[in-house]
Image (cartoon, rainbow, N blue to C red):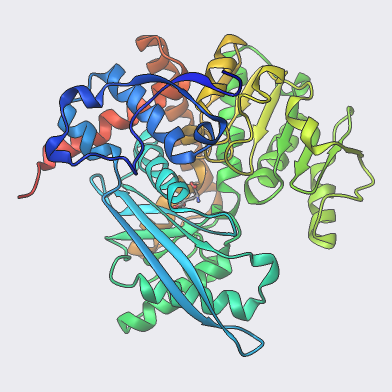
Length: 451
Ligand code: GLU
């Protein structure tokens, strides 16, 4: 049937049977046709990879059930006074997928299209991400449905503080530690830290990471996700016997992750030939000067109008010819609709969930080397871990120390995943999931089921 694809996927969360009635056979990975809507549902995308990895691991059926679903899902409807005197009510989520290996950890995003399914998927991805790089955190994620482009700083601050207050009993340095994500930043984290501290009666910096450096933030945190992306890209090149000077790169997204990924790769001698954002793209076959582009964006608020490159069709950017493609924006940009036309040799997933499961199969047939999201973009949460550690010690590292520690973890994790893939004859994504699920399952079993 047109638009339908055969992929393994498990039961949808909404259709979750009562755990007690669930038979072992229900946990099997089923092969069923899915629509484009299902293909691009982030929760389904996460669960399908989880099921495949769990099956390949021969995971115990009980642990499979425990790890497949989030531990806790919180929905809040928060009233906020707007600048014009009216009252608006915003919906926010915080999903804690697992706290088996440590406190929940993960960002908070502000966007009009945030949904519970998306936050669930992102929370699960955080669990696997923290386990892939072996840091002592579980996984969580938050989101508020709002459009930051149409909100003043004052409105954003009041949304953030009220959202934090609504979650006050569920977050904390040993419970769940938020961080920035799409459309949230150091200022947002400062407000969360301050609100939490006001409720607790003392300053507690380690309740969030990604804070400004002067109030407990870590040096290097701002660039950390991009730095991690650049480190794993180097490793992928090494693995395939390629060199930076003769490698062309296209980066989709020029926010925190995309801009720092592009800049660090550009500094290492890679040729960044294309950069795209939601409202336009740039192309220059001779390479784009990324530091100038960053200045241009800081000055004008957008990438278009930049003199050092030509305007390009943003929808054609992902399928343009390059050696390394880095989607660094949002979910579901590589799907059954365009995967066949990709022309890169290496795909490094700076974003969370940029590739659908149907696209995975197409990329494998095309022999594209994939550095999956839960490995490729783990540099951010790894440096968040360093921030949490430094806050709790009250002793702060130099930027060089932070970056060296980050690099070591990223290189080791890359090698672990690639070796795991070879040993178990699976692709890099399923290898990363298997490695992560195995670690979380081990801890879950060791802790036992509390009754
Ligand atoms: N939002 C980032 C991510 O998706 C960072 C999370 C964190 O530092 O806790 O990985």
